[in-house]
Amino acid sequence: MNADYFSLPLAEPLATAAGDITEREGFLVGIDAPAPGLGEACPLPGWTESLDECRAALESADGGELDTLPPAARHGVSLALLDGAARDAGLPLYRHFGRDERVESVPVNATVGDAATETAVERVRDSVDAGFPAVKLKVGARPLGTDLDRVRAVRDACPDVELRLDANGAWTRAEAAEAFAALDALDVAYVEQPLPAGDLAGHADLRRHETGVALDEGLYEHGVDAALDAGAADTWILKPMAMGGPDVALEAAVLARGAGIDPVVTTTIDGAVARAAAVHVAAALPGVRACGLATGDLLAADFDPDPAPVESGRARVPQKEGNTGATSPADYA
Image (cartoon, rainbow, N blue to C red; front, side, top):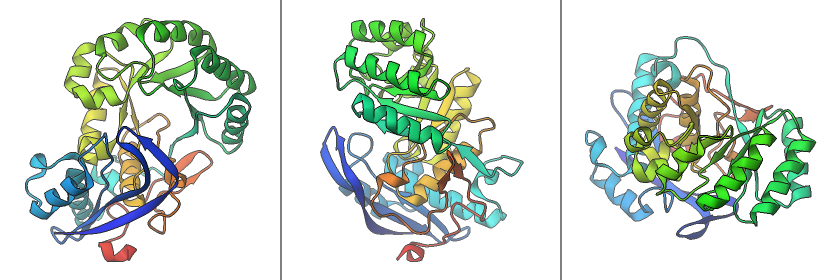
């Protein structure tokens, strides 16, 4: 097994709990058996181990110790193994996961961000015109009344699009209760992480409203079993890189569906190799909702060519054997 360092510049700086970052750094992981396989380990502060911890874990890994690895390193190794196994079976990865029929594409949402009202309306209209079936609007950084006015303006301008909000845990219980009472009349599909990650009980209480509750950070802080036991969400946001691999994300998605919870697969703004794997996870789920996989344009440069480009609000599912068709880090040199 070998791991080659890469750095992909971001189109705009990304704010994280560890500070702003301007590039996504990680490793392309190559294996030789059972067939050549390629994975991506792209750690993100606040979600996974650090870059140095990821490097050290990959240097000490032999491919047979997956569950001892931290999330991003495990993702890189597990994806390389899955890629090799799917290639050995002569199947695209989503078919290797067990999906019987051919899947050409999966629906994805557009992310509008925390723009002022007029800009947000314009961006949502552009997304709808581009064919996106759902859009996600960031909330929580502005006063609650301002955010609610923004959401009303977007809904008035685009009455038919599926509207999702992401509060990143910014609201108190009182603010969230006020927000949900107003949002119930605006046909909002769900609010992602309305409360701080530690408050599973508060999220469970919000489910009395018509507007759905989605867990993101809270799912990773507590784990899927605790989130399930708490009845804390209608939707789980599943990030394969942060969960430790596409196999883990798919297992969580199946568990969620069995409990009546919708899985939405998304990325941590990874490179094209990991993004393609997330698309395969979504493709393995019949009838999957629009997922957060239209993140390639957040990178100023990426691995080329993109194996899962987004067109008309859908991500194309790679059909080559394995994940992307690439067999080693040298394919992206």
